[in-house]
Amino acid sequence: MAHHHCYQYPHPAVTTDVAVFTIRDQQLKLLLVQRAGEPYQGMWALPGGFLDIDEDLEACAKRELEEETGIRGVYLEQLYTFGAPNRDPRERIISVTYYALVPSDCLQLKAASDAADAQWFALDQMPALAFDHQQIIALAHDRLAAKLDYSTIAFQFMPETFTLGELQTVYEILLNEPLDKRNFRKKILALKQIEEIGELRRTGNHRPARVYQLKNPERVDIIK
Amino acid sequence: MAHHHCYQYPHPAVTTDVAVFTIRDQQLKLLLVQRAGEPYQGMWALPGGFLDIDEDLEACAKRELEEETGIRGVYLEQLYTFGAPNRDPRERIISVTYYALVPSDCLQLKAASDAADAQWFALDQMPALAFDHQQIIALAHDRLAAKLDYSTIAFQFMPETFTLGELQTVYEILLNEPLDKRNFRKKILALKQIEEIGELRRTGNHRPARVYQLKNPERVDIIK
DNA sequence: GCAAAAGTGTTCCAGATACACCCATGT
DNA sequence: ACATGGGTGTATCTGGAACACTTTTGC
Image 1 (cartoon, each protein chain N blue to C red):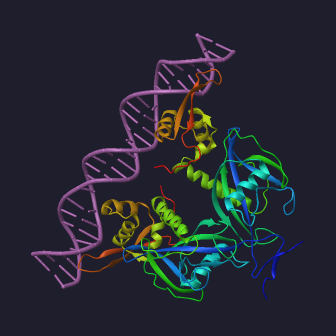
Image 2 (cartoon, rainbow over the protein chains, first blue to last red):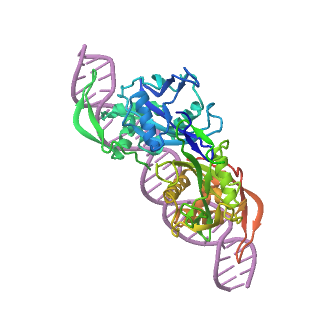
Image 3 (cartoon, protein in one colour):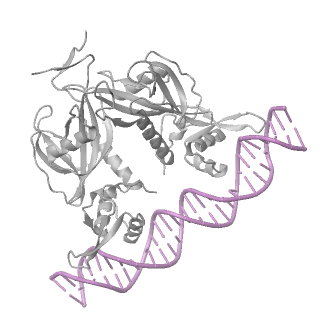
């Protein structure tokens, strides 16, 4: 039953790995799974796994993400392909990596067969990571930071409806600096990416806030 | 001698393909090779080929590029990884694609074993292309256009020494619009990426131009 | 002396930044 | 009544865009 798939020349294995970001507890966090098997058993790694032979790359990333963490329907973008000859001790593995952004109200994490556990980690409190995943995360974080400036990618962190104050908080966490409320609102509304749904949300001892939603929830636009 | 490399699960093949751009005859051109064997025999394709099992991805792109076209030592950056299940009729192939920029004085093209011929094509005069290479080229062109705005990537088209007039012509070709000479010089010199070598170049019936060179020829910086 | 590209500063405009007060609610 | 975040407009600054003439050479 073993080694029935034979080729004239050696073939590397191909995997996908996904760096999933969200905003939780006023911090940017990343989703990791604890490895159930060798190699690097017990260490933490990005969700991901081997490509099925008739499966599209992005479909593989989505499938592994759902199998290992229960997350689905998120914004997903290809990041980079890693293929250093010895990045995996078992065999030559090419990893096509993706990064994903999930809304801050996404709670549906589940541990599944390939992963003993899945957990959110703040970027400055990461455990020891398997393979070259530290490098993948660093690149994903750089890309996310760059895209904040010239795209509407940050909207992908928002739940279906949200207030301008909540959106500003997300931007402040991502940029790690306070923003001016009036300038922020002016810039966001000028993008014409969100619209009022006509409701007010009351939370706490203060004036209720207008509720907005994205006009094109799936879309990330390049701005400027 | 065939099919000695066996695996428990099926493995895709991995290739690299490279979209090489240059400026020639006042046009942005792309390097294609004519396919010597099946599939798509006689059609044109990007230079590229199969990854050796112990070879780094970028090394593979550079090796195939030199084997098929004689070009070496160019600026090379990973573009995207294509892996639609039926993009190659032979077997499942994942292609890690790169794009490269070569200086406009690069003449060393040679036909080699895998490619019957190598030739520069203007982007609006492309022949029929093998596989999904049309799609790869479109993406590479988009990326190049985007990077013009926020990086110093255009300098990679310049030979070792050049004049500001030559540099402006390159930008005008890439952006497909005339530029104001004074604003262009102001912006370029503000980048502090080039320096005078102290010589003048006289070409034609007019005043000689100062000759410049890059301070860091290998480096591409993000600007703004 | 004429044609052709090299070289050089200033004005103007638009988009980003800085900034302070009133409003609606819960306790 | 007071504490809390929601909501709003204007003045200033800065970086990009527009713009014309003199210089040096080959013929």
